[in-house]
Image: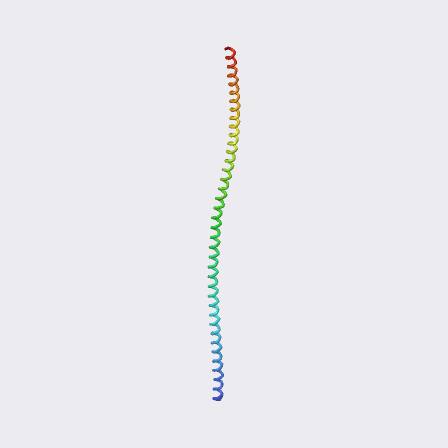
Amino acid sequence: PPRDDEKVEGRDDDDDDDLSSRQGRSMELEQARERTQTEIALEQDADREIANLNERSFTVNQIFRDIASLVTDQQEDVDSIESQISTALTRTNKAQVQLMRANARKSAKMKCCFYFAIALTILGFLLVLAIIGFKNVAGAAA
């Protein structure tokens, strides 16, 4: 049979092993807690980054919508300007045609006035000749 002092020594070794085992488990649990807390912190950081990226994405999306709206408004302005230019071109062409017609009428009117002036001159000349001829006939008869 073992002696009492041997039993006591064996128990001390077992107690030391149990204590060491408990301390090891305690350290493992503490490390697991630290890892879990680190993982939680990392997940929270990742969630914040995802939320931040989502917010930035929304902002960029809104910027693109605003740009699209501006482009649409500007396109409407450009279309309006193009329409006004087209209208101005049409009106300018019509005005040019009317000016050409007015110039032609003016030339025709000038020709008509010129011919009328020539006719009046001839008529006046004939009238003067008739008066002179009438005076000669009346002076010869008297």
